[in-house]
Length: 251
Image 1: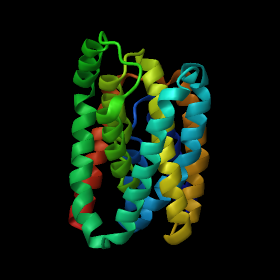
Image 2 (image 1 turned 90 degrees about the vertical axis):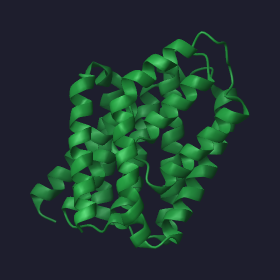
Image 3 (image 1 turned 30 degrees about the horizontal axis):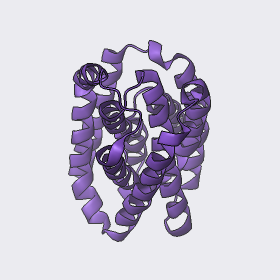
Image 4 (image 1 turned 180 degrees about the horizontal axis):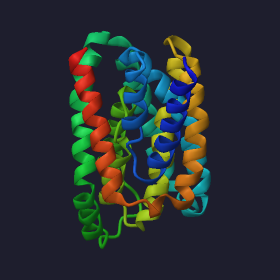
């Protein structure tokens, strides 16, 4: 790996850590970068998942005030997320690599659509927030489980999915919902990463660079990420995601 490649992977990790904390779709930055440097899709995915775990921890620490008082409703959702993450990781390792290359472009396209539609999703959440719901309920918990399976398998825009699910399931301020999202998405990455460390091939140097970068980005995202221009951020994510789709389809 050249110094320029290492710097690019580290920088992508910083951006991904910040974006995962603020919105959720950081994988759309790190995953395409790893692909561009020649890592096979499955290796890039598992290495990216492992590398993003510290960034989620940093983001959760930064949101500790918003997390206060959410333990009771967070525990069942955390269990659902963890179970989903394990299932998704097993699916990734059980299905052939050709299946991943065939499925992931569609996943990225869905993730990009969610990024573009996020303002409408946010307005829908605001409209529903007048209904008092302290806990997610069975349907919300099942939806969190499904998002965990998706996150364990690939994970791009998992945070946006969780924001939509939690916002429609709970009556609370958006920042508190976002704090819970950071924890749940990070838990999915953690359990999937544990599975990958035990049984998958990980490119450790890129994973380490992403880990250091995402830790810095997660801390920055929790502090000042809300100041990022959302329109410009979505535009960059879409461009990077389209490049990833084109590369996957061209290989």
